[in-house]
Image 1 (cartoon, rainbow, N blue to C red):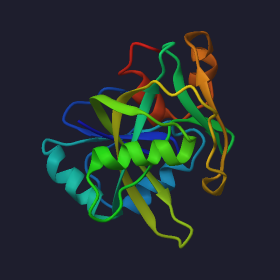
Image 2 (cartoon, rainbow, N blue to C red):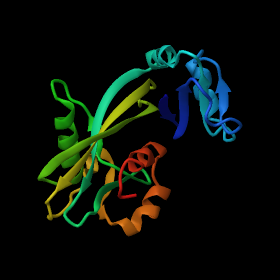
Image 3 (cartoon, rainbow, N blue to C red):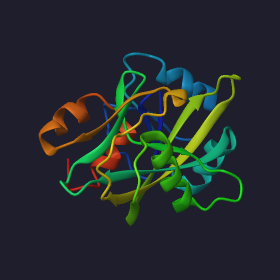
Length: 199
């Protein structure tokens, strides 16, 4: 199954319907602009593309977008707290675009360091990737795959939000703030949390 978010709503591409009755159903990708238009409607919670060849449908969907790769991390300190950022009115996880010639784990560490001012990062394991689409400032649709890594850090210094990236705050969140975090983040980020024991 392929899962991608547009306007924070899921588009599922798979063989068997999972959400009958709650999502709009299509039998092929067809015109991606039609999918995007459907997702702007308030009553549409998501779209399922049910097809015997989901790989072919994913390729069709994928070809509509400019594709970029990003990487980020779920960073835990020695107290077991999670590093989060606040940007555009929502809690989020630090991440950013892959630079030319850079490998993906290096990108994840660099982006977390730049966005949060944290140091001494160590990757423990790779987590499942997420996909989301957005409209660039130039008016082009982008499909972004974000690779996620579970990390640890012994850093106990001051956290510094990267203001030029629109980050307003960086904080360590304990388990007691889980519900607050989940209630005000993106659905793709909640998918990352689903793969952690923390939340």
